[in-house]
Amino acid sequence: MRILFDQGVPVPLRKGLPTHEVATAFELGWSTLRNGELLSAAERDQFNLLVTTDQNLKYQQNMANRLISVIVLLSTSWPRIQKCIADIGAAVDRAKPGSYEEVVVP
Image 1 (tube, rainbow, N blue to C red):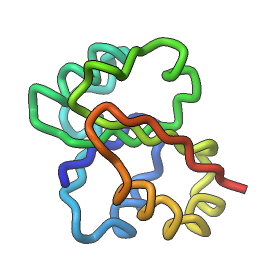
Image 2 (cartoon, rainbow, N blue to C red):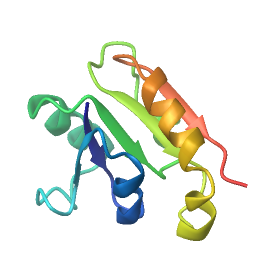
Image 3 (cartoon, helix red, strand yellow):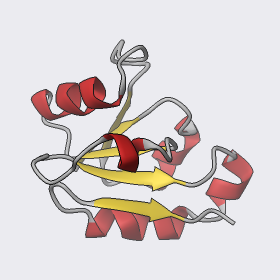
Image 4 (spheres, rainbow, N blue to C red):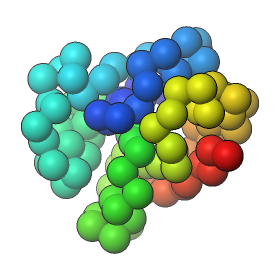
């Protein structure tokens, strides 16, 4: 699966998803793209999943007609996210085109 990390997603999470191809918005020069633009660019580049920490995305975007799925991490803290890598991996495995899921990071 091709996964795009939005700004705010800790890059070390990439190592927790070893069977997937992961790129970051920063690496692709997409740091300044807004949510809708970023989703469209990711779809054009054939990404399957966007991982973000933007909790407002669900209010700003209609995922019904999207090819890409979205996982929102409810924290930007790497030490906390690191403890939830298995939950994040499970959410990645459940992702379907147009799906949206939030992963609670205690």
